[in-house]
Length: 125
Image (cartoon, rainbow, N blue to C red):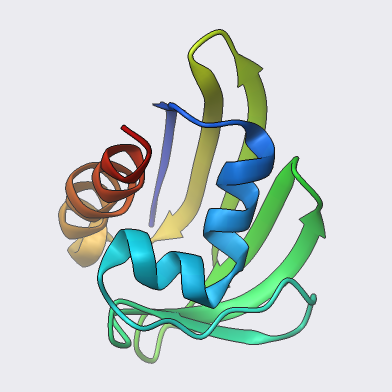
């Protein structure tokens, strides 16, 4: 299992970024794919036509999202933490993704960089 941490600058306020990641309609707008999402802890979510699925664990409005991501039959939880910081260019999103299965690591990192955050940043430019 591997961990990944990176900061992304999104040209939007923390409030806008939080809504973009917790509202199914807005996720659909920036990702181009239908999503199932709620900002209620304990709810299941799905993005990119089921490519990303998991459970919402914790929310702090406009500040933090913590999720558990599922990887097939994996027994150990993969935890995603997104923390939003004010930045002169919008929002600095601190991503921590822990317990990524070794076989999935490269694909997950590529997904964060080239799909997830690339699409979110482009949406606000």
